[in-house]
Amino acid sequence: MSRNVRAIRKKIGRLEVGGKLRVLDLFAGCGGISLGFSAAGFSIAGAVEIDPEAAASHGRNFHSGDWVYSRARDITKTTPDQLAGELQIGPTAEAFDVLVGGPPCQAFARVGRPKLREVDNHAEAFKHDPRAQLYIDYLRYVEAFAPLAVLVENVPDVLNHGGQNIAEEIAEVLESKGYVCRYTLLNAAFYGVPQMRERMILIAYRCEIADTVTFPDPTHFIDLPQGYEGTRSVALKFLDSEIADDAHHYVPAPKPARSLPPAITAEEALGDLPPIDARKLLKSGALRRGARRFDAPMPYGGEPHTPYAKLMRTWPGFEAPVALTDHVIRYLPRDYPIFARMNPGDQYPQAYAHALEMFEEHLELLTKQGVKVKPASKRYEEIKASIVPPYDVGKFPNKWRKMWRDQPARTLMAHLGKDSYSHIHYDSRQARTISVREAARLHSFPDGFAFCGTMNPAFRQIGNAVPPLLAKAVATHMMKTLKQIDRGEVDESRRAAATVS
Image (cartoon, rainbow, N blue to C red):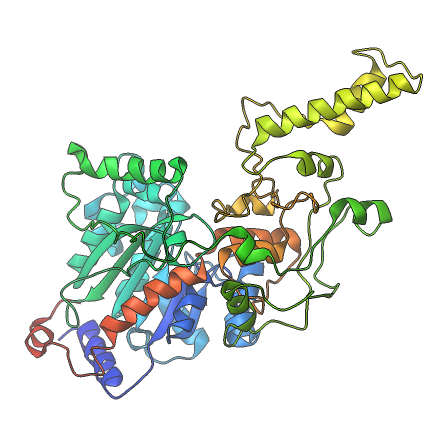
């Protein structure tokens, strides 16, 4: 009997007597998946994350800031045995019950099925592109830790990455290692997240404990806008093509019923947070250029106004503080007046048109005051630059977007760490982009979840994360399958017959 099979049986025996399911989160970020799994009853026993600030956030929220759990780790340089040793959790193969994570997909198209199935024998193939190594290391961790279940999350494009269906290839590799595996596309808005975010979700169980994989039923309904249906259609079109006629592990996502509660809107998510009048703060000098640190407490203005807001304030273990410290915004003095004029749904072309109108109005005002500004003069160009953004309308049509108050937000991206024009607040009186705490709310991070670093790193951590409520829906569904173990429902003949490692 191989080491992994012995470890699997030992884990099953431990869970049969009520042991808690232990999770290792790879490419963990600040902990969106970890938070969802923790809320579903799993124990977050370890994480691997290369970004120092994200790793510090994960350690702070799940291990009280313990340095052993908070330090950044490079998965390409940290072996499973090293990780198990640093965390002092005993034999590697027995340390964790569930592996979760979303390894980046860059350069993965170079990796073929045979190389994936024999990762230990093909390390040389990936030396020249370290990004490709990330999936290989993920699979090495699966091999070394022998989890009972695996979750992989990624963007829909992994179904057609350079002409390859990466999800299918991962599923085949896991199946060859003794797992039953399926993948699908889920949208976070269908699971109580106030954000339309489409993701590929892959779930695998050891064949000793399950012979099928299903996905959670939606809890909310929304007619997705064309852009999101388009994203899904492009991915699914590849599955229907001849080149991908072997996508045997894909299953359609459960469809939301129109009778379900409507998706959570931006206003339902943000309406109870203290208003920030950007133009007023700018005029008073309270808003200035420079790093935004989380050191200025801002009390709530009242009680939560919706069940979602109440959840964000009362999430067990992450209850809201007396006052918020990360409700901070970007310094964008040129653009606040433009934000005030934009209509919900307006993007950069509309914003640019509003700015040109404001520029012409300013010139007319100067003329009435007896000040003549000659077109194309230095003064003319200076005034224009102070009012009108410089970006090409044709090249950046989606760079700006003003949110609708009565719809979920569009996808929060990692580039929130560089700008947040993609999410301009729906309230024209506030005339600003969203704050760090508002981004966290739209992602379903509770108010008591703390982000390490300053504003830009916090935005990046949020944009990179899996929405916790989506993770919780998947984790709760997986728990039902894994709980068959402690109810004694594991098929004894299947368990005895499983001999793959």
